[in-house]
Image 1: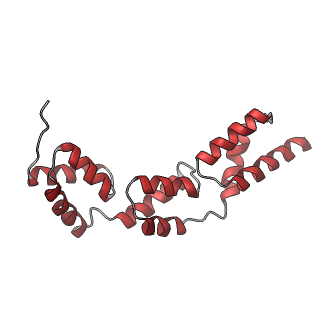
Image 2: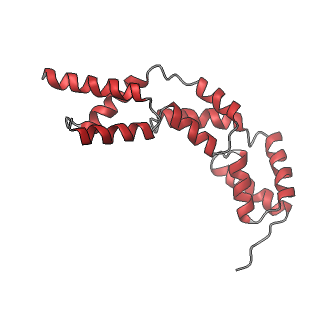
Image 3: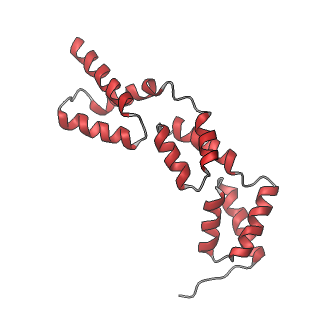
Length: 158
């Protein structure tokens, strides 16, 4: 099957249609335009156009995405940084976005999640599974262990 080639106007229209549905990082938009058949020279011009009109801004994208990942997906600091990095966000923008989030309450967010995940089952296998699950979601091991101990302690009191 022959790959379709987009001229500048077609590629620009494609970019604007993509941005109409949701925000994209510059790299995401670039990757999608390349897959659609746009030329690299055209893509840089399209990105410049989108930057000028505020349709693409990696810094604000990173801030919004980080906030959503923390509040909606309940991800920890590490996983948020990883997700933003995978979207092509610069290390400076990632650091700035994550710095704005408050992770002081990580244990308070984590506690009900750990409690639900363990559901009173404190076998070694269940605890290990929960640990891996929350590490994958970006939480610090010390926070996870503290929450597991808290849940165990409250269960012992009953």
